[in-house]
Amino acid sequence: VLENVGFFVVESSDGQALPEKIRDDSDCETLQLGKMTDISEGIVEYDCDGEAKYAVFTKVEFAGRLLGLSVSKSEMRKLSTRFSRKLAVVAVLVFLPCAFAVAFFIRRFSRRVESTLERLEKMNNEKLSIGLAPAESDDEIGRLQAGIDAMAEKMQKRTTERQLAENA
Image 1 (cartoon, rainbow, N blue to C red):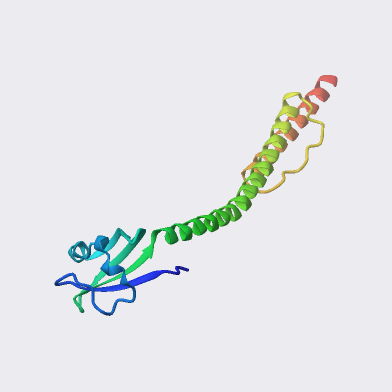
Image 2: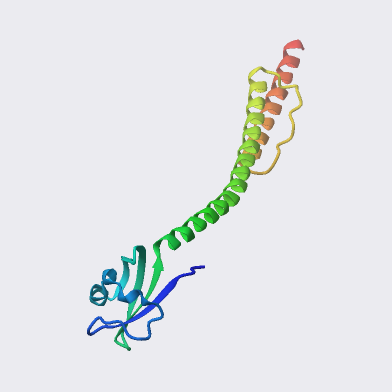
């Protein structure tokens, strides 16, 4: 929370601060009240009694006045630093679980791909009689594994039939 916030009201016509001001920052020569009335809204950086400040302002059309807040630049930096730290903590708290979830998914996926490659290597080495584990799920990799298993079974059956025909 900002501790030193000044409030000022400026008449648009002559750029003079009205008595409704709560702090005396509008008396600072560097506040550039005339510039504020010209551009209607924005942020102006100025110096008041050796302290760097920001003035945030907007023109209120129905009242013909300019309303503004004056905030110490060092106070804004402190708030910005605290906000940045909190944002970093939130980012870490969000990023780490996401990173672990991605790592878990990739590890699970790579295991399933490795299992599929092992099935293909067994077929390549003509070790078709070795029982293959059933497909792990009904997604694309599971269907691929089931297809490889079915192909291995058919190849084993044909190999067995051929060997029986040759021996007969």
